[in-house]
Image 1 (cartoon, one colour):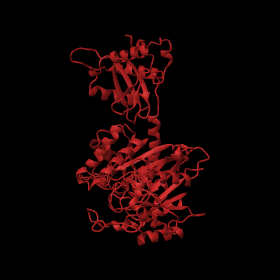
Image 2 (cartoon, one colour; image 1 turned 90 degrees about the vertical axis):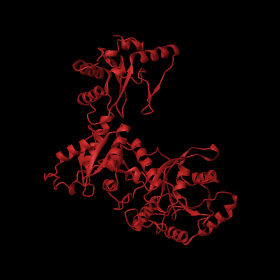
Image 3 (spheres, helix red, strand yellow; image 1 turned 120 degrees about the vertical axis):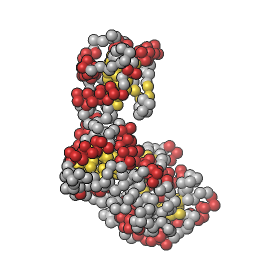
Image 4 (tube, helix red, strand yellow; image 1 turned 45 degrees about the vertical axis):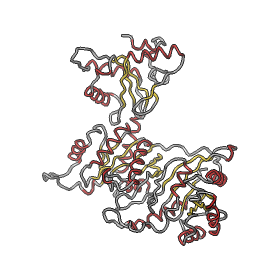
Length: 524
């Protein structure tokens, strides 16, 4: 059976997002006292521990929804450019209904400190009459969660929620963690245990990033074939990273739609800082990043900042020029027709840190070239997953250095003793050399270009690590002496590197005749 789904619903500002974070044990959803912060559905898969440790863990997908009813706060109906935020109400309520339709359990949140409000009564009526979402089959069970029950003095107020007709409420405080364990134990008992294996991992995880109004949510909806994500002309509609799963040509894909960003100095409060953090986390989770560029506007500082984030992550990236249908027949400032070739030259000048990244032209709203972009993303993921044999890599390095080796004014010859690919995604190459300082930035760039020409990594980032022979030999000697594996942490990625272990080095035929002593790899 699929993973059970839990939907959290309620009026604005009753603590739904805080409850999601409490269940997930991490900050998944943005929490802010401003009504309407959560606009899309925000989902997370959680592991629920059994009561008293007796029994198996249970997996569930918990979905936070926007507040039903009043969307705007007093004096905050319009955003900073004058857009009417109240126009999002229908879209938000559609997303709430979609979450209820697919839920196996509904957690109806009420604020025990505010008491039962007319909005709470309206939501309760809609849940009883199944008017919140159109569901086939029997309705999902509804349990009331009395939030903000910060201590014993609020318990009597919390039990007033029993009048809503869904039984005794579960009491909890996300702030003080009061009754947290009782609530989690109750939820554990309400969801079924999965009979089969968990759902398999998707074939590709795509992070879709870009500045405001670049068309990210429109692309997600086009891919999913349904209004799964709110699409609005109001800048900044998406605040959290939204996961949307769909299939295309028999392959499963998860698109991670992120908040549209702007310059940090223009941030309107801490919510936008949270959104930036979610975008960074989305890039980290993804296999491939789609960097959306609005063809109708110039490349901005935000675009350049996002490009820097992608470069730092070592993730494969497609630079997607969206809204191409709106500009393809225009003329540039010199009166020349805008062509893909001219626009690509412009992008390369503006985003200099991504010279290897392919550029694709697309119209998400019209569906133009969308499938080709996804095919390209799969191709990049395949490139980043390639592993080059140690023999092939060392022969390639030898040819490159013989053709053009590093130069040094002092006359010291730079040498590469050994090379190995120790990781994929990103392809990580370790070169053991006599002196890493002899390999200048310009020469490293030359090496990268040669690798992309000669190895199957033409359009993906390559992580190059230089290690001195003396340092590696000392580590090998320490390993032999201690009889244990020594690992090193890569300071850039935090990953463990063990360039001498049999697991890390792809043993090829040309190495089979070498002795087991790792130091023998570096004999002159």
